[in-house]
Image (tube, rainbow, N blue to C red):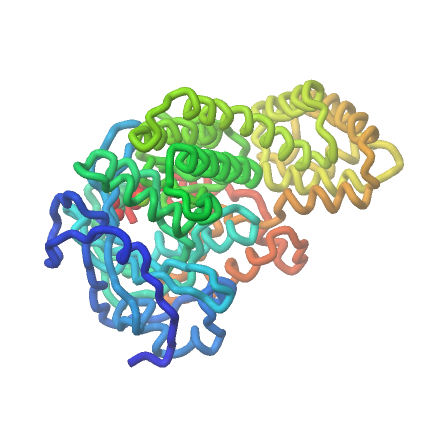
Length: 531
Ligand code: AMP
Ligand code: MG
């Protein structure tokens, strides 16, 4: 028995119906929310990295994370007392089309821990072997995609973006064969398992799939979700009814909207916003072929599967989230049976997004107030400027704050010099320089009218404009090293990304724009779903 002890309270399996078949083979599951599924025994699990902040969520100390029990438990090799491993059943719209049953094909849920603060944290392994939902795939994950999930989850958390968390990253000691670019070149790669944590891993696709089943599976799932994740919506002794479900949908819509505003703030492109990858809690979930904007381009997506349509490109994300909310609204309609209030909430999403996006953009520019018309125009002009010459969004906004700290009026030449490191290449042709200098002049005038002091403005800007993000090429460099057995790159990135808004002068090399070699390199600007 394990030395590490947890208090489990596995509500998902206690409240919802289980699949009657207990063998683990691929199948269509009807009338159940999950199937029992044990993690595969891995040959030689070894810890690559762990997050101390995520560990604290389930009351694990640094010493606990370095114990052999930790490796055994969070690789899936040894159950802790109270764990009840299962894979959940869900469906989803993939690239706009209903895909039927999907489910946890390579995620195995271990249970829900109640920590010392009384918080619920569901524990899930990704890459822990096949489940009844694995279809034709192996249920495993490779090191490169696991590093990407592990680092990005924690980077997003420290950036203040709602996200599932990553506790640990381990290699399994086994090889997994993948055809990285789906071009007929399968090759063995190191296998890995990530342990992730979230208050709940429920997705839009859960409700969507249960809505298509006979009986009251949908109601059971929604009532369970409300009782565990949205208990504040329940009025004492009152049965759940139409108003509760509408309030619930409103919260999902709001948190989804706010999550996308954050993505737009930090330059994150999810890459696969299928409805099965949308969290009911408005958390960023399922880090696959995601990417970080290098040159600002609303049409950019790192996902090669989406290269033809750009459905999930950076600038599409708000609309796609809205479309996904429509699908969720359709799914839960039988619980509400009233179109106008649902439609109103869907319209409210668009209004809220427009308002929150503008507020966020104003903060990025260092404005404490919002002048709807004129600020929208100023922002529009800036984004139009970005389309004239490749501009690194992260470096640009960060440097705009430094420029803002000079109080002797604006020296345009000096200002442009200050911004130069954000441009690809880093000197602007005269005509474009003129456009920027005109914009900077207007920006300066607007800024002067804002009530903030110079110091307050820099502070505001540096709280919303990160200095360090998980640049695509940095993740790939760390992966290249790790695949050779040297995990120092992963741990260096994890460390620096814990304080993304701090200057960290000794880490300046991790704040550089994309080098030329990375522009068209697989893993840097092009990613497939192969993982
Ligand atoms: P994704 O595109 O990664 O969100 O996955 C879509 C569906 O495919 C989900 O049901 C996943 O669990 C499943 N899936 C993805 N990769 C694998 C794999 N290697 N083995 C089994 N199922 C997988
Ligand atoms: Mg997924």
